Amino acid sequence: MENLKRLFENNEAIVAEITKSDPEFFTRRAGKQEPHFLFIGCADSRVPIETLTGVAPGEMFVHRNIANQALAADLNLLSVLQYAVEVLDVKHVIVCGHYQCGGVKAAMGDASYGLVDHWLAGIRDQVLRHQSELEAEHDEQARFNRVVELNVLRQVYNLSRTPIVQNCWKRGRRPLLHGIVYDIHDGRLTPLVLEVDGSDKVRALLEVDRRGVGV
Image (cartoon, rainbow, N blue to C red):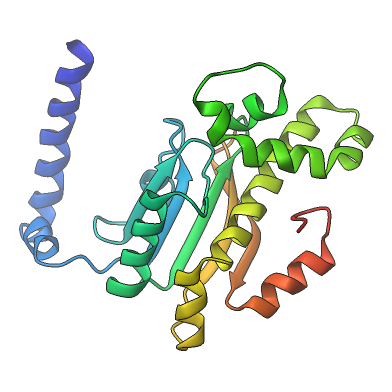
């Protein structure tokens, strides 16, 4: 109960601090949300994206799941994506992975984890697709980091192929797709690919770095 109590105490302190300098802060944001970003990230509690980026309430629409997946069969993700780009007119869609991701680590091994095995199947496919590259890297941590990056790039590719994004691009409404990675050791965000705004750019990415995404 002590940890739960701390949440409410922190909330009261934060609200008091914000409203002291801006009494209408929350009232202004209650009327309508107009986010600039859709953030698709991992559910890992060590990735506090709002804190890391300094965005204010209302600036970032958020979807999280294990290992920041953007799967074509995930109706939850697709519903969030459609609402973000078609209703909220979000201009930037960000896939953010993070080093030391437990989901990615699990997918790199042979152990079974039950239901989550189905969820991580796509990452396991990535590991197999890039097996020769990964085996050539003898440092275990470097291999782990590389699979985290491969996973982010793959999810950006998956987003680019959804009918939702494809239809937006055909109409000239262009959410820019970005892939970034968060380093939990130093708190920094690093871009992997930025401003993907059409199929040609996605294909170009695949051609330039076949190791990175695959087909």
